[in-house]
Amino acid sequence: MTTHPATGTTRTPAQEPAPPPAEVPAPTAPTADLPRSLARLIARAQAAGWTTTVETQPGCCALVLTARQESGETVLRCVWRLTARGYRWDGATLARNGQQAAEGIAWRALGDLVDARHPPPAQCRSCQPTASEVPPP
Image 1: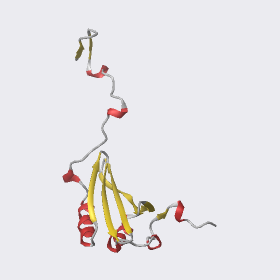
Image 2: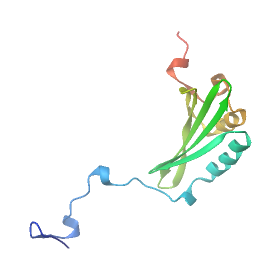
Image 3: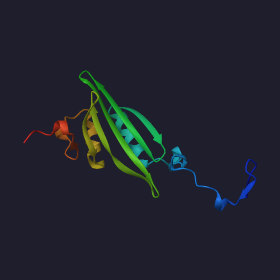
Image 4: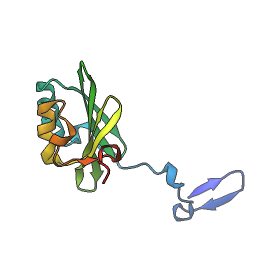
């Protein structure tokens, strides 16, 4: 039971109001529970010359791979969502010089992108081209 001194009322836990949705935390997992595929991808990316950064947020984690070349910067953002069954692959996006080049990259295509470091979008068969890349009819 909770006593509210200002009102003098007593409530049982079942009578307590639910917190607003913004206050309900999203599921989180300790860093040790991050996906094994993430650790393998980090090792593969670093061997290929990518700079790696892991970002964790409630409900998801992301691996941000950055490659800098003379022609500019390539960023590959890989996302895993936390579900009741653990982390699941949610796709990746590819950006060049701040412009999104591909999205919805499948796990199977990711290895080729990581190994190539800076492939042209046409080499990414499992990627969805962005609107700016779709040729007019």
